[in-house]
Length: 248
Image (cartoon, rainbow, N blue to C red):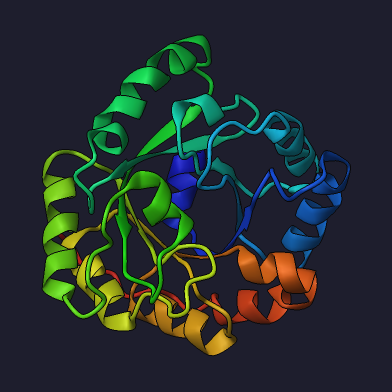
């Protein structure tokens, strides 16, 4: 049901880092974000195990008021059962086997134990955001160039050809520049699946431009951590723009 809803809907998604969120505050974070118009919550970060992730997930779910709670895991060890859907990320922009398939193999026992957790296979494309991000450092992979939309489109199309269901374009947490509309449009042209875009999005204008270029979900994290829900309503309103849809 959550995956069907993700495909039908779209808008602003708030990324919550369990390493930076006190479990006691997670419920209030989710309640305020959903009340300000966020359409999904993501749980995750670029590093390994966080012992509070499950507690934070439960708090987010209590306060989420019916909006989907998705996990954005870096490794299989981060997976928790207290979410609606896991974005099973394959780092298709890189060539490090650990993030292309190895972590997925390690995740099999988790999904066998928790068949109630939905899985959305997601082609993860790291885009050059102007400086070395945590994702690049941890994964030891180079991002795709920010001025090569044809290269982004080729990676996305290849991922669709091998059966992936969604795409996540990411400039990385705290990126100095966001994924450009031309790259988003290129990805949109290569897939009819759910398209997430995140990293470096700091204004209503950039959120609106991402949606108009074809993003289904525009993801903010660092901005939310810095400004709290003061920034969410404006961004959520900007994200109500319907994305361009292209059949792939």
